[in-house]
Each structure stands twice: as structure tokens, then as C-alpha cells.
Amino acid sequence: MKRGLTPAEISTLPAVVDLVTAGRALGLGRTKAYELARAGEFPCRVLRVGKTYLVPTAGLLGLLGLDASAAQPPPEDR
Image (cartoon, rainbow, N blue to C red; front, side, top):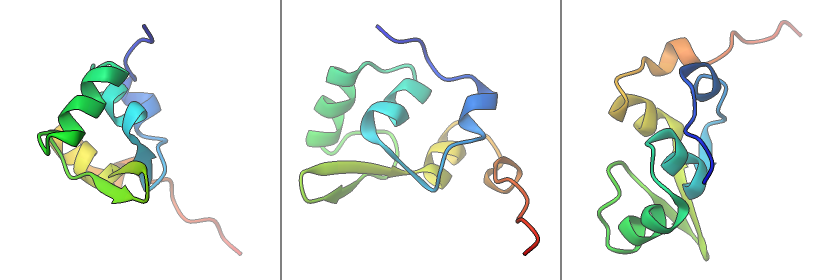
């Protein structure tokens, strides 16, 4: 079983993550994450895109009590 994500790893996540990554951030295994998503009981919002489950990182951060704006890297100068 893979270990959970650290706060530093969570802070580098993109805008949406796959269900397995979101589950890892919450300390859930792959099977349990999919079981909860299929039952509509995953603890934060899950998007179904075709056969893929995606989790918006902002909702995941909110659930974990982390500030979504602090987790985003500053915009690059162009």
C-alpha cells in the first residue's frame, strides 16, 4: 500500500486529481476510494468524466483544512 501524501506534496497538486491521488491524501486505499465514489459517499466533490473520476483539488484542500490559495504557486511572469 502506498503511503499518504504529505502537506508539501498536497500543496503541489494540479487543479484536479485522479481519485486514487485524492484517496491517498485522505489516507484511503484505491479500493475504498472507488467504493465511496461509486456510492456517492466520497467525502468531497467527485466529477465523473466518462469512466474517470476526478476530484477538484480546492475541495480536497478545504476538507483537509488547508488554504487553497496558499497551495497554488505564484503565477509566472511572461
